[in-house]
Amino acid sequence: MYQRQDEKECLWICMNMKNEVQTLGFNGQGNFIDIETNEELPINNALEFKPYEVRILKRSSD
Figure 1 (cartoon, rainbow, N blue to C red):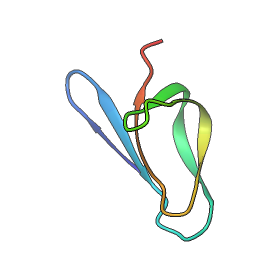
Figure 2: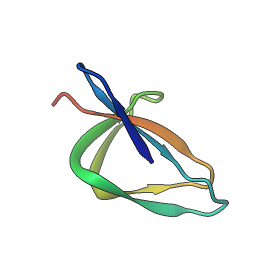
Figure 3: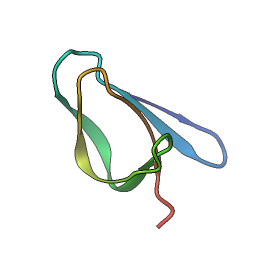
């Protein structure tokens, strides 16, 4: 997982590079949006990822 930001927004790029479900620690809480699926995800310091799953997240404006 890594983070990229500019003056306007911050994105978290999250990848599970293993062939098994992984729970990735996430230094943050609140609602985030998966920018590919537009799914809103409530996050409380961790997020579960399927094998080889990739998500690009941004903080929800709510």
